[in-house]
Length: 529
Figure 1 (cartoon, one colour):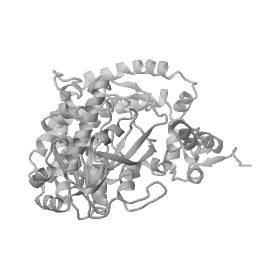
Figure 2 (cartoon, rainbow, N blue to C red):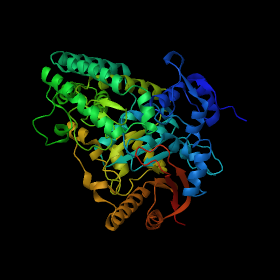
Figure 3 (spheres, rainbow, N blue to C red):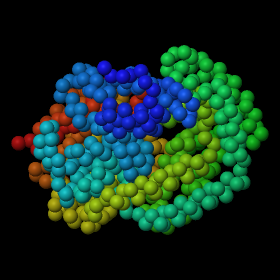
Figure 4 (cartoon, helix red, strand yellow):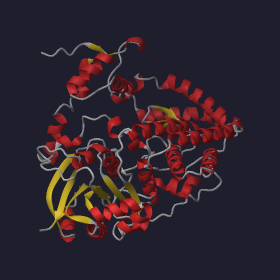
């Protein structure tokens, strides 16, 4: 009989959970469970302990049970190995993969599984080898390009979005990091000088102190979250009461420090979703970036600014990915279980992301290979790949013409799920990129009607037919799709291809609030015989 009625330190709990789940569970993971009320803390901070029985109850959906449950719902052909559930988030967002947020990207381990040389019970044959050229005609944030570089393969990306191409190319460039750091230091110094003439930092300091005192009193950690989890507190009612109670304190500080909460106009994304103070700081940094002479350095620091301003939009923490209405005052935050505030300065995130970016670039430098990777901006249905590549990298274009492209690994957009330009509207506003929303295939704003599906099908077919001209005869195409409308067999047939295999994988860590059983299929296409 397993002894379960004992208390464990966080270190003991992490060791036990690591063995129980057959995956690494750190003390920080255990602390997270305590902080967010999933399990109860016993004892004081110096000697916090948790119940082994509570851990068992929390983890009971793991260790095989979830796999059995999902297979019951999604079918026995679900390949659980492709869930990659043994990896921590830090591993699925390793090095340059997290240089910038992006909705709808796949994890690098999935790309690596299909591109590398290993075989297993599901992947019977390796289709690619070092030196091959991989094409991703829906590049997005460049995951396939980065993994190709790690694996010693060349890669060509194509994306209709100029900003997506900027993100992707920024990840694979080899930088002079001393030059990048010098420019970061210069811009940070300028931003700090700009803020020294403002009341913003002093206002935030006072506001944070008031929030700290208020939240400690009314939302003690971890007791409050623990009670909410067990319905001992009506979170919606209690949160609304305390939000209202703190508002006069906030308003008094706003008046005292003469803080301007809104801009005078709301015509553009940058006008609507940023306070006046933040907008001025963004412009300050952007003006300094324009002074950078080295093009690669300018691009990577532009990516840092874009990442920064995305985190500084005037929205609640819960709505960061799905903007609803601008927030200009303190509010009760269900995500953190306390009263939170919108941001009034970009300095904290700018400094955080500059350090993080340099660290990630250094990590990737140790893994990259001497290979070519380029993302082209264009419509994959019509682009002349080799001619456009010639303009960007003549040596790579010469190699591609001689060798041709071995195959495709890509995740086409899903029908009516994401507006790819809109998710980075702030960057289009700031950098002045031309938007090409009308060229997106299957965007959210066109919905999931019969006509939208037909347009989507034709769009993907056109992409495959165009790209096929640049592939070797015995090509291999892998497309990651959630084919709930069963349209990919039609796409394959009309593109002159056949589906030779398909791999169904569970998707465990989705950003959407629906955490139910969900799978996607990786289709393996080859030329029709």
